[in-house]
Length: 254
Image (cartoon, one colour):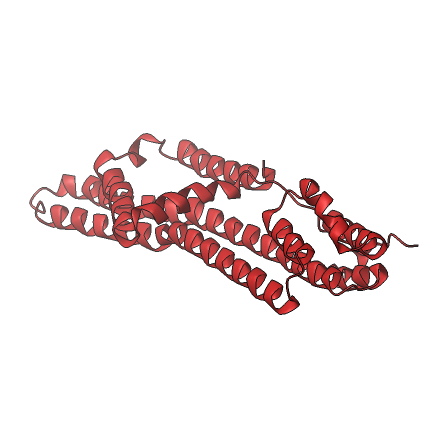
């Protein structure tokens, strides 16, 4: 569980709700037609803008903002250095027995290509294509959630305009103008809440997760190519440690 995402959203929503309660109460801020305009309209527009299969995948991937499996860069580098030591000592074919210890399919694919004696240029091309398509998938998923950042406030404004028109048609009753204006503004309020207190933090965290995964893939690619070329394990470690901040760099050979 990503505690930061959960606690952050809980704090933000709790403070907003508390401010409503100590003000005029929550009741005046609840309007079902306004809710339908913003939620229904936003969902409908996002569905219209995206193929249904991409929409489903994108919304499912939003769970990465709250639930993810952390991967240690140091552990990955240590594993790759161990592979380099074994390949140097027993030959690269010995890494075939290590496949069961590889949970990441990208790493497994790269090592398998190296073990099969594939040319370095081919290995790099295959892995870079895999990497680029992963980035595209992530960008598409983030874009699905990102649509709500733009669409929800726009639907809120549409709802406000609808409410203002209804209010202006009832100008003969001054007592009704205030409540009607309040209801008209609620759609803008709902749209802002959805965009800034749901969609924006989720999309931002999804982008961070994507960057983290890309960084791990870059380390894997560099390690696989170094192992395939028969580099000394110390050199492999130095190459991979370059991806870490100096304070996090460790050596297995000290």
